[in-house]
Image (cartoon, rainbow, N blue to C red; front, side, top):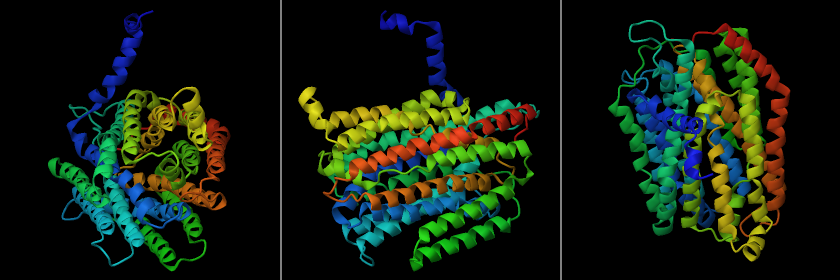
Length: 511
């Protein structure tokens, strides 16, 4: 059977056309500001390779220390409720969206300037490692602030009424809310595609300082989107001091623990954070019916378990540099391939993902992620020497195949959560709602970072010392398989039952 005959099948042509054109048909001009924010978030990847090589060559931080730092850098995401409450209830010069996007962009720019000053040596008020911490923190806070504003906009851009003023069908609203989240993931993936290869080339040709300065173009993208289009909501509400005050108190405690260096400070913060965020989330969902609350609760547990699995850490990246010889340009090539295929995968499969139950989606993503981790483990065991001798290709080809296979699935796991958040976002609390759900899911990343730190302490990997790397990878893969599957088996049926009851009730989304 020829390719032409295969492609002529009517059902296949229809499916392919639907997959390709659905995101295009779903786009509306009013989506542009939030999509530019997500695009800029992805495009910040332009500094990723320069940052990795600079850390390895110029800083003294170990993989365990970097994993510990990532815990602190994740914490601004866990106090998103503070930013969400501000965006919902505290206008700045009359603005509840544009002003926050602009402030966030300025913070990202300040972070990039700090990294450039550290790499170039023209900022010397602190050691380079501390300047790296400061610059990274400023950038993260700016990204979080812009993300909160974009999350709120992602529900506000969906019309709740037909042109004649009659209410839209709830299922149509839910479908559009889901597609807005899809478009946001596509914008982020497109940002990664645009800069991934460029970032590797820049890092191989110019100084790391220059690459960080080039990154200053990225926050201008999100800021220009906020200036071009009217993105303000139609009304505001009074400040909920239980959310804002509690969040500020929580943030103060976190900063105090970070500054004082209390033993097990990160663990204390994690437990405290879980209690605070859970209590605030319960407060926000108090007005929803019991079945909807159950749907959110069981879905959150499953997604939390999926995201709370550890990663290997910087040790594997250093292994590819020192042992496999992956330079900046090739790292850029891998990033470019991964970003492009992630974009294609999100584009083609996102429509199907939004129509599948969350346990089913995450079950298959868990299995696929585990299988696609095997080539990385094989590389640490020296398989590239065997493939070179037997088939004539070495580590770089294996890495390209691995990246090409794994990339399309990385972005898809967030779509079910974002769609769920968009559907049940309460009126005038949309930024706070998204922020709280985001905080809960980012606490899963804190749990993952803590596990990464512990595993890097148990299986020590450092510059030039990679003998423990295969065992570290094996343990990471095992946890990444067992924990999500256990959560799906325990709570998947309960989620399905709650979801069916909720769908039968056909709640009308908030106007």
